[in-house]
Image 1 (cartoon, rainbow, N blue to C red):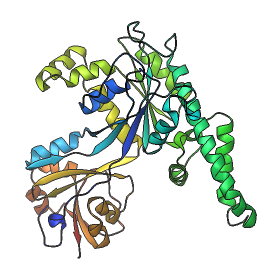
Image 2: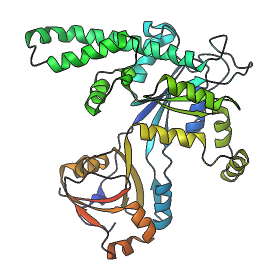
Image 3: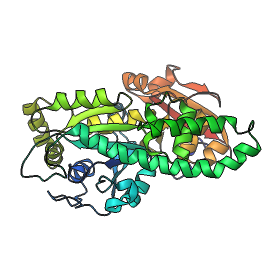
Image 4: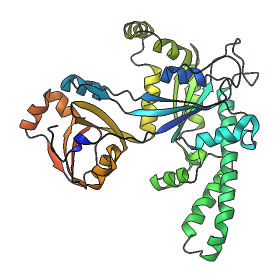
Length: 374
C-alpha cells in the first residue's frame, strides 16, 4: 500500500517460525520425506538409525492466493509463510527409558509445535524394518506409547513439585491440581492427551508443560502404489483427534528433483493436481490453526502466519515489536478484492480499503499496512 513516514517501511522484518517434527520408527522414510520437503539432501538409506542428529530445514507454505497477489502486484520479491521442519532420528520401543538415544530425541520433539508422525504402509522386502511385518497401526501405537510414558514421567515430577503448594493453598491452586490430575488419569489409561476435549487454554498449558501427546499430530501413511485408503481409514479410526494423509515419500522426492515442466507433465500422467508435499505442508499449517495475512513494503510482498483471531497490534508484532508497541491503526483490504480489482490504486480509489483500530482481529487473506508511532 502507499507509503508513509510512520509505516513499516524502514524496519527490518523478523519472524519466529513455527516448527513441526517428523517422528516415527527407524527406517520408515523420515529422511526421504524430509529430503523431499526441504530438498536438503539429508542422508537416507535402508538401514535403521541412518539419522543420528536431527536435520532442520525451512519449508514454504503453498499459497495460491499469494501467487495471485504476486501476479497482480508484480513485486520485486515475494516471500511466503514458512514452517521449520525437524527430521528427528527414529524412536524405538523403550525410548522413554533412554533406549536408542530416546531421551535426547524426545527432548527435541518437545521443541516442536506440532508432530508429523510417519508410519510405514509399504511392504518392500528390500527395505528393512524393525519388525518382521509391516503394520502402520502397531507402529503408531509403539511411538504413541513411548510418548505417553515420557509425558507421564514428566508430569509426575511436576505434580511432586507442586504438591506442597496444593496442600498449603488448596483453593488458590484447585484449578491447576484438577487439570494436572486429569492429565495424569488420561496418561495412566494409556491415552494421548490430545484425546481430551481441549480448549485453547488447555493447549497452551500442555505446550508450556512440555507434554508431547498434547501436540497437534498429522499421521502420514508412507504408502506404495496400493493400500493408500485402507491405511488412512485405519489411522483416522484409531485417532480421530489427529490429521491423516497418505503419500509416497519416494515419489515425492523424485518429483521434487524434476524441473517444473517435467514435474507438471509427470503429475498429469499420474492424475495428481497437487503434490503430496503441498497437501502435507498445508495440512500442518491448518492443523496449527494458522491464517495468513500479507504486507506490501517497498515493493516486497510477504505473507505472515498468525493464529486465527489475532488482534491487529499482535499481528503487527509478528513483523517487528516496535510496530506492536507503537500501533496506531492499520489499513486493510481483502486479498480477494485486490486480486479481482487487478490494481492496488484502483481498489484504493474505489474506497475498499478500510481503516481499523486495535480491536480489529486479522482475517485470513487481509492485506495490511500498519501505521505506528515511534
